[in-house]
Amino acid sequence: MDWDAIGDAAVSALAEYLRIDTTNPPGNEARGAEFLGSLLRGEGISFQLLETAPGRSSLLARLRGSGEEKPLVLLNHIDVVPASPDNWSFHPFSGEIADGFVWGRGALDMKGMGIMELYAFMALAREGVPLRRDVVFLAVADEEAGGYFGVKALLEGQLGGLDAGVVINEGGYATTDLVPGRPFFMIASAEKYGYWLRLLRHGVGGHGSMPTGQGALERMVPALARLLEKRRPMHINPTMLAFFSRLAEHWDILAPFRESGDPVALMRIIEDNNLAALPALGAVLRDTVSLNMLNAGVKINVIPDRAEAFLDCRLLPETEGEEFLSYIKDALADPEMEVDVFMDMERAPASPHTGPLFDAIAETVGRVYPEAVVSPFMLSGLSDSRFFRARGVPCYGIIPARLGLADLARIHGVDERIAVQDIKEGTRFLFELVVAICGA
Ligand SMILES: [Zn+2]
Image 1 (cartoon, rainbow, N blue to C red):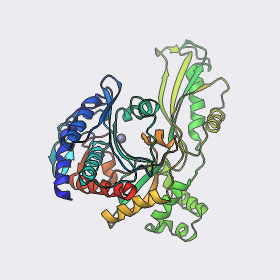
Image 2 (image 1 turned 90 degrees about the vertical axis):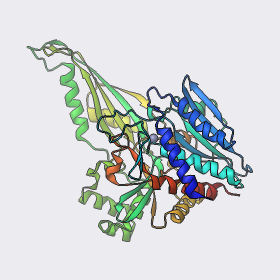
Image 3 (image 1 turned 30 degrees about the vertical axis):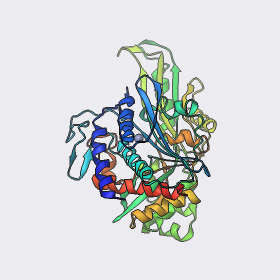
Image 4 (image 1 turned 120 degrees about the vertical axis):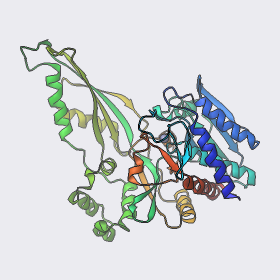
């Protein structure tokens, strides 16, 4: 395998892919799908374009295996979040290659990974690697707006018979800040789920010069204050326990837990050192509530008779929605508050972080990146993996890019970029990973 040549081709393909504006909304993923299709066509590989709405296409290509085991899906999304060129070093849709990076919206999230998956897939085809499972390359629309024109629609429709055995997707990455000098590969084997609530409180309207204490906002605000003052109990689930066990091998602060392996000792360390105050860590240790929208009032001298609040709640995979809802109602302590679940995202069980699939990932990481540490992780955000996990398909999220904490702000932020080196090594990593999981 000429990995240098494959890597160079992947880098220039990514630059070109980034120039196709697939900002969602509206998405226009069809243009991205056609570009990926043109690369497959160049290799003589056939593919299907799957349209869920005008302009909203996904692409599927398949390498046939012996069928001994269910297919592996290399999943990626074509759409990106909006980017305004202000403050960017290069225009976000210019696909600039400079300073050892490919720059542009989607470089990390997740056109870069899509290209790595595609070049690994095409290399498998070219080599004619014998496979015991089909390998499916699946580039989808609409991940950034919930997957309703992408994975969700496809699994409920055109891809209802896909019958995947394992999915490789985004979700994790290799952080360079957790253990000095060693990339820490966080493999997302679980994720929290969104549980979005709408609160509505009616009250007595009137003239602002004569407050009654019964206005809608006057009732809404204290109830919200009661809720926001509370925290859900900390719960370290098996995924995060495994994560902390790996971290404990390198962090002296975790020594008492390293020695005992006792989750109670771990919780004490987290509390004593206020580690849950770090938003990224706090988010994976408990259910969270974020008050993000409040609508009420039309004029400064009019008491509103109606107030509405929206809560972005993110629940651990172990939390039951109904139990959480009664917690919310108790915490609000206002029987006249209407509480509606207006979006219950797919709650999905964690994928196993022990066993042959996870071991294959860990071994492949170790082979391609000898200095790496590998750990399972739970994502606090959402990915398309939830639709597969809810159907019982194990999913693993890993973008093989080495990122410092400061780089994370580039995802959905300014100056998103991916290292040329990461694309080259990542393509080889994904190739080796597919061989490890699917090779005959
Ligand atoms: Zn993404």
